[in-house]
Length: 165
Image (cartoon, rainbow, N blue to C red; front, side, top):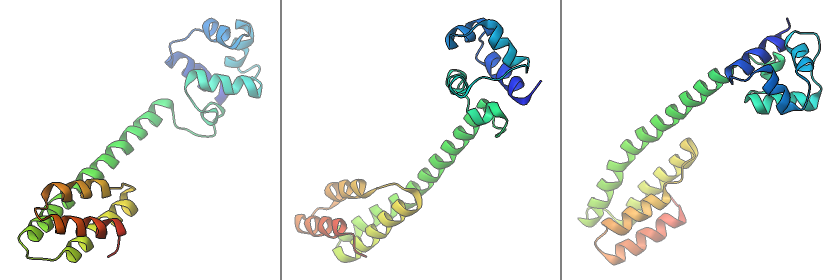
């Protein structure tokens, strides 16, 4: 058996399909399909693409170019998703106290709007660059909710929207 025929059979069985049902989906005879799994023949390009779609695998996987099984691809995607989520959560836990602290200092008139905007714009810049996340709408919402003095609110929103630091 070839790598292709082994992987084709494995992928079909993982989808809990019979040779007959898969051959019907492809509009070919069961015998023609069996020849693929037995390593006697190979599908044309069009049927190879259709097989990959039906079996939810890549053509590279079926042809032996890549070793990732559908399960390992799914596991890798899941692992990356959790990794990204952890980074976002860590970043959120780092920035939220800094944002609230800066807003509180502004309300207490301990620092100026320009100083707060510098802090916020750096945080916004880092979130975009490092995490590809735009937190500017979040920052603007926090400004609108937490700043007591309307004039400070207006100035700070303008400075944050300008994005200067």
